[in-house]
Length: 374
Picture 1 (cartoon, helix red, strand yellow):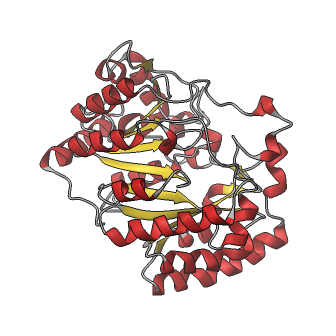
Picture 2 (cartoon, one colour; picture 1 turned 180 degrees about the vertical axis):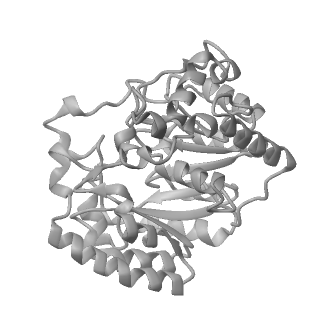
């Protein structure tokens, strides 16, 4: 599915967003993208997951999942409607589990369709049956499937509690959705010790199932999850394989981030994301373009920030977005390079939002003529 053209309203709010960034202080428009944590339960146990991995069974103190299992449906609709009124068009549906497990998930997609918003769904796809596949096949959304494998043997290594039948059903669902031509369908593969030697199979799986986009990620894993991190020798083998897979994917017409992966390893070294040096060079713009909502409606600037800006249900999004607390955060984030200090209360040293910030920095400094989402 080609990405829909931005309307005049969306173009105008985008221009106001950029103007607000240039003022270094005030937000002249609302968030362009919002992310909602819809579900904190999961129906699988990926070996590298920092919430549900079996490697964490003896370390419950390291699992920090909100107690609320699902976002309230009325709260969801309030956030969506107020976000749309302020100019948001892209909605990331995720969580510490799988968002499609929310009892009202399919109805939520319909609400966003009526509001002409763009849902971006991160899912393992295991909750799909034939009926839901038929529903999703008619929805203009981006479904990104967390696969982490291109063959059943590897998939079972990554999902210790999974079955071959689940993998086969999932693959059929992906192929059906891709063939429908309505939603965008892509795959994500987090690369680690259990799948690093099967990256070519991931590319071939995408070709066979009609996918035109694959996102690869190095694993982020420390402490009890450290056993899934590649050794230096495995890392070298992986880089050789990725260098072969890049032109292969291009020959199939499949878009990947392999070139960036090979150039920077996406700022991950030995399982740790390292971004302190980046924010000595560029600012953080997240406070102008993005908002993250916990299941209880708490708004944070980004997913790992400890800064609570307010709570939907207690006040409006507009009031939270323009409050002095948010303005102070924007100034602090914007001036990081000049001050030489990271934002207190945020994980700027291990930031998962770097793609947004790098894209905007390049646009604002005329290194790129367009802004693309992460």
